[in-house]
Length: 201
Image (cartoon, rainbow, N blue to C red; front, side, top):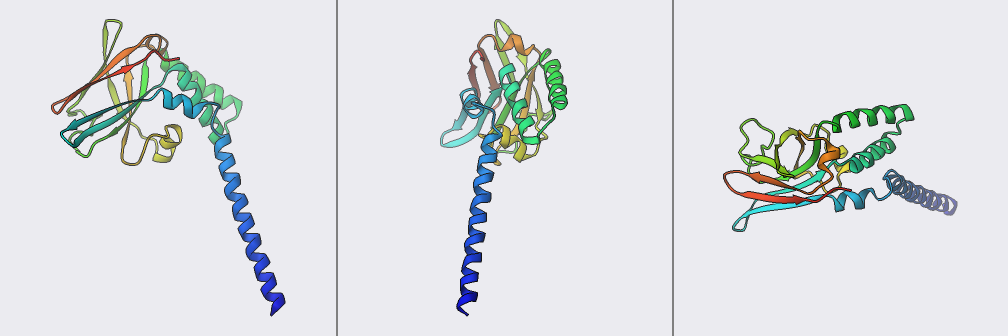
């Protein structure tokens, strides 16, 4: 009986040790799949705007411009997560560069308790969004993000399950748009808010 109890105790200790090792390895692995300064860069280049009616929140919106630098960091992160070979990385980079040569993209995390207010990408949306920069105005084209929540949260840690994700596109090349500050306006029946987007670097 003593021998069996001793063996049981050793087995439990072994299981606990293996579990701790697995957790530790998982944590290390997750950290290693972030490019250097990834989190800091996204936090510094995500801009927030909130709207209230009295004590009631109309909406909360977080905007992350996908500058050339941000796009490269996101590509690096995806390559680390999915362990892409060099050929796949180059293919994705080429496609990204072709897209950014014609448009400027931003990721939008949008929260509202109202179903009528959260429909940013719908044809009958109550909102208009546009970007004013260097004397020109660009109207936003919004597309609902189709990526699953774990993917979006992995790339944009501030994105939560309570928000909706959207891709916001403007008809201006990224390398031009990122060179100077701009004013992003969201306007609709319940409120109109502006957000300064600094020059991206």
